[in-house]
Length: 529
Image (tube, rainbow, N blue to C red; front, side):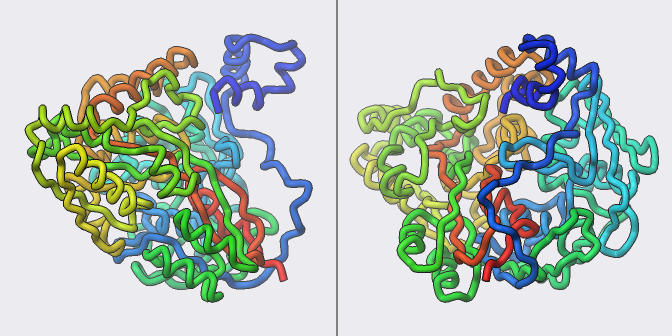
C-alpha cells in the first residue's frame, strides 16, 4: 500500500470533510496531526463462523535445527518466527493489507517522521507476572543496535539513533532521518518486546498469547494458553505443539494420517494430494516469496559477470511456473520486489529464456564445456526441480551442471550463504526497504551473492528518507535495475505460500509476510468439532 493510500485511509474522515484533497494536503494534515498507527481494528468477516475455545493442535513447520532460538535478535527462519509470535508481541502488528495495527503500543506517532513517540498499552504483563514498561521497550530495541548482540536486523535498527523512555509507558525513538515506515518496521518479528535485562531466552518470557511450557531446539516447542493475555478472548486454543518436519512428503503424510493438524509451506505437487483427500484443505497466500539461484560474485568462475548472465538466461521461467509450482506462482525478473508492491518496477525489461544468449555469455566467460557444481535441496522450495530444468538447459548451451542434492536438515547452516552456486528461499518482507536492507545492502546480514555497490547503498538510504512518492518509486526502480543487471541472484518466479490443514482447523486468513498467517497463526485459529 502506498503512503498516499495509508494517509487517505487513516485520515479519511478529515479528508472527506475537506473534499478530495491533494497528496500534499494529505501529508500536511498527517504531519500536523501526527502520522501514527492508531488505526481502525482489523476488519471482521461477515460469514466467518464463531470461534470455539479449547483444544490442542500439532503443527509441523518446514525448518528445524539445533540453532532454533527464542531470541528475537537471532531468529532467522519460519520456525523461529512462528514461535516468536506465540510467546511475544511487537509494538505493532500487521493486518491482511500489511498495514501496521496497534499491539503493545496504542499509538506510534510523529510530527516530522524523525522523532516518534510510542505510547504503551496499560495492564500488560510478561509471563512471569511483571508489568510491561517503557524500560522493556528501550532494552528490546536497543539490543539490536549493539554489535555484541549480532542481531540479524541490526542494519535496520541502526537507523534508530536514540531510544529513550520519556515516561513509564512512553518511548521516544529518534531516527537518523525522516522515515514514514517506522510503524511497519516495528511490526517485524525480530522487534518483538522482551523483558528488560533478559539474557536467557529459552523460557520465552514475553507478553504473548501462549506461555512456553517446553522448548527443545531442533525438537519441538509446547505452548499453553496465557490466561492473562491482554487481547480479550484470545487465544482460542489451549495448547500448540510445534516442530519441524523438513521433508515435504513426510510433512504431508503426517497431516493426512492425522498426526498433525497443520502443515506449513508444502509444495505445489503435495497440494494436489491434499486437495484430493477428504477432510483436508489448502490455504494459499499470494506474497513475494521466492526461491533464488545464488551466485557468489567474489567466487572464481562463478562470479564472472558473463557466467552470471548466462545462468539467468538458462532459467525457463514459464516452465518453472507451470511444472515446478503448478501455476501457484507468478513470473519474476531477477529482482526481489514483487508486483504486489507499490514500488515494483514494471518498466524493467524481462530476462528471457534464451539458450543462444546463454551460450554466448558462457563462451565469453570461458566456461563453455566446463562442469560446475550446483547445490540444491528440498529446504529451498522447488530448488531440486528448478536445478534439474536448468541442468537440461545448460547441457544444450554447452555447460555441465553437476547437481549436488543435499538433505533439508542442516542446509541453511551448512550450505546457504556458503556454497558459491546454490539456492536460497526468501520469505516475504512487509516493505521494499526492509527486504533490500536485509538481503542486498553491503552490510546486509543475508547478502546472499556477496554483491556490494556503494551507489545501491546510497539509493537505499535515499529511498528511506524520500517523502515524495514519485521520486521514491523512481529510486526503488533504479535499485531493482541494479540488482537485475549486476547482482548474482536469479529469481525465476514469485511463489504462492501453501499451507495444508485439517478442515477442522478454522480461522486462517492471509497475511502476506509468509506462511501460517505471516507466522502469527497460533492466537487466531481454533478447532471446530
